[in-house]
Amino acid sequence: MELKSPVAGRDWQDLVAEFGSPLLVLDCNTLRQQYRKLQNALPSVDLYFAIKALPNETVVNVLHKEGGNFDIATQGEVNLLEKNHISAKKTIHTHPIKSDIDIRSTLRFGCTTFVVDNEYELEKFVRYKERVGLLLRLSFPNPNAVVNLSKKFGLSVHNVQAFLAKADNLGIHIKGLSFHVGSQSKLQQSHVDAINKCLEIITESRTQRDVPMSVLDIGGGFPIDYDGTGIDIEEFCAPINEVIENRPKNIRVIAEPGRFIAAPAMTCLTSVIGKAIRDGTPWYYLDDGVYNSFSGQIFDHAIYPKISVRKGHTQPSVLAGPTCDSIDVISENIELPQLEIGDLIIAPMMGAYTSATATEFNSLPRTHIIAVNVKESQDNQITQLV
Ligand SMILES: Cc1ncc(COP(=O)(O)O)c(C=O)c1O
Image (tube, rainbow, N blue to C red):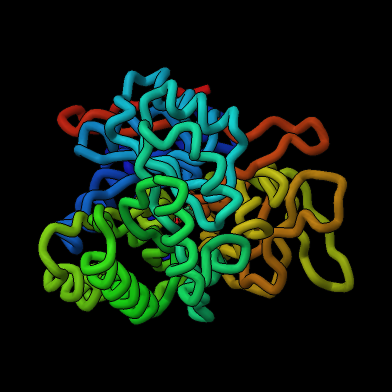
């Protein structure tokens, strides 16, 4: 398998020669394409990029130019937007559990939409009730998602009426519902079922409440193709889009995609720094590993494609990271040609939950990122980031 560098006239080795190894290459053209693909697949949904997937200044600026909004969950993410002069009007705060300081600093920034999923969290908003509109996050357990996001968070649909009654008693406005069917959700039916249930609850609320709900946040979970099985986002979203287009009037639909937009936009370049034969199997030690950019293999259960630049007869081999810890193994039983020290491994689809969860274990620095094609009109422009 060949993978072309996103910089015309310069291959991956040229980039490593100039910027060093390991290296993450962020291609802003791919970032824009992913945003546009999802927006086209869900034309009446307002997209709020989940910053946690790839918290990076270039990413937020490119998506802001595309007209994107932002899902924030922490003060650090607020700081990233403030530093880049992105208006709080373009944000929602989606962390279901927050400290009072989180709430106050987010309000100071100007963001007024928050997510809650239980009565304790609701009570935190009594003192801010004139200033906020809340979304109630529901839980929709989904065995077809790689990352389950309905165990730690989300109110059971059976408890919605009691929750809404409590909100009414406290005089707090619940302006809508939200859910997250889990990240890398393989079957669109999970989104469809959750949307249908939420629309039913919202419609019911219209007959029973003075101020009815008017927002539905369908979360993230839109899958990408890590293993070449050929996911087509248009096809994936078609049934989701159908229920959205047929929703009752005056319900605004928003989404919080992270992975789908970020993952294909970044490629990791990592080099062989050592080798050994152990029990007859070749081991290749790379300069990036699971404590660094490949951290998503641990935290996000992702397995990224890996391509050897060197070609030749292959045999089952092991790719390991550079730290002293034995968990730092990227791939076992991977078919590779005989590699030499200095050889390059290219790992595409490494934009989401990779550098975002990297550590500096063993005092090894995080892999730095270069951004290419930052401006659409100026192809091949390279910007070095910190
Ligand atoms: C609250 C919330 N919104 C959005 C996302 C983004 O989800 P995804 O990357 O699956 O699109 C996440 C991921 O963890 C999340 O927790």
